[in-house]
Length: 197
Image (cartoon, rainbow, N blue to C red; front, side):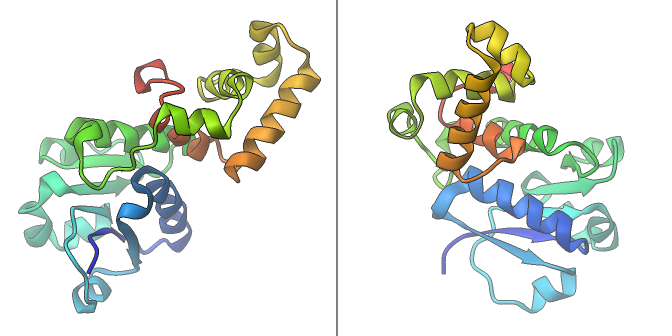
């Protein structure tokens, strides 16, 4: 059985969105599996679980289980949760924007094992270049850094219509308009560094 990244969260929509971001980070090397409760997780058959993404409530009610694997457990919180961080858990604030959540996931990935993790997706700049043109990469880099279309046009000395054209091409080629997913793509493909975001 393949390794699994496990999400345990009662909020289905939140879990589905998180799953999409995690799949973008880990690629096809690992399954990302969702359970709506800790009981459902315990009764399921699963392989090796390198990381758990678990709602704060589930961690709180099953602290004995998660305390022993705190370094592999990322707690999904609603707002700042210093108590979990002080207990050795990484946290993700589910109330943040999708782009902020994507940055939090990438920060956790880099803090734990960076690019040396055997299950991490490892796209290369060469692969990125085959998908996006140089100009599309420049536009994407500015978008994920937080620039709006007009600012991108000004910085690259192109028209607003050209920025929108490139943005549509990027979305079509990468099959997403999600700024969080675009951020993950840009970082993993060395279009921007995490420190630039």
